[in-house]
Amino acid sequence: MSALAYPLEGITILDFGQIYNGPYASFMLAMAGARVIKIEPPHGEPLRRRTAADGGSVPLAMLNANKEGITLNLKHERGKALLRKMVMQADVVLENFAPTVMDRHGVGAEDLMALNPALIYASGSGYGRDGPRRDDLAMDLTVQAVGGVMHVTGFPDGPPVKAGPAICDFITGTHLYGAVMTALFERERTGKGRLVEVSMLDCIFPTLASNLGMFFGQKQKGGEILTRTGNRHGGLSVAPYNVYAAKDGYVAIITVREDHWQNLLVAMGRQDLQADERYLTTDARVLHMDEVDEIVGAWVATLTKAEAEAAAQKHKVPTAAVRDLEEVVNDEHLHQRGMLRWIDHPVVGRIAAPHSPIRIQGNEPMELTLNPELGADNDRVYGDWLGLDAGEIASLREDGAI
Image (cartoon, rainbow, N blue to C red):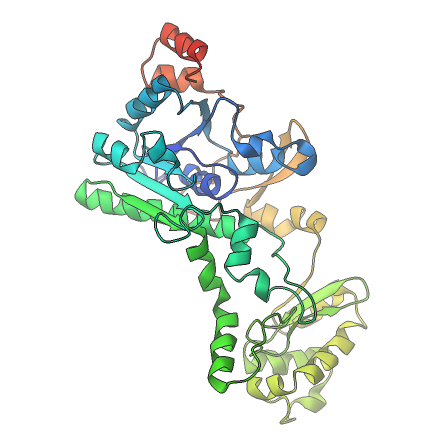
């Protein structure tokens, strides 16, 4: 392999991913050099059927860049036969259907791995391939609900609130990528494939670490069990840790170490508090959390969010202005690093599309392409790669198999 080759060059992924978590995993595989063939039913995956008005076209472009696109009807016998033929030449089948969908079509993990023992079958689902909730329908919102995310999000006097982004989907997609890479690594040693699976519920639970620390601590003490802490630390064990109102917006400030607090006092011009025992340690500040927030909040209120951020950062205090989406998509740092790339979208115009967060030294990050149109690469994949002639492809199309 040349020094400039992408790590996954020569790896072929058959990608049945839909909506977010499956497509994000395969997007990162594509960005690492794999050939990713996105397989959709003839009417398209669910995300493709959302209108531009509700944002379906932009996520579709973001998560399916640098893939080839084909259509395949798994309800058709000729469609299943095509998949079996492709599996003989592929390295990975990736899907995030409900656990029994592929089995019901006769092309589940066991069937496909029997055809190609070196195949890696990667499955992402809401609750996993076993357990009492296996067959429950799951989406990001519902997993946030059942997984405790909504219960700990929001303010103490308010109702549960979902996290703004689709965190369950994307955390699961990241883990699914890791599962595929782990299986590929093992295959290099053994030559054998493996079924790997990732559950959305399993993935989201560890994110509750701070909240669970407080939960078990309060249970042990027999005290009131608090849950929603607003913008304060999920375990109420760090102070200051909050979002404070500036003249023109909000600023997030956290002090993890004692020197952060001392530096913040310098930034605020409150050196008079440097030896005050009420605030000298994290434990002490937690006991006086309301007072700490009042001190920091009073200072931030005299500044714009940019001024507060700059003043605190100058003294090495973890601080950031709360930015809106307009500010984020135009972020100089993200664009300079190449994480965001401007591309022209045929429906909504110029968009900032993300690259893979994984940087591979020695490889230039590849240019982003738009997601393929539905079935755009049928002729190339079924013809050039699979070896079917034009008449066979036309017959499959006429028959409704693709």
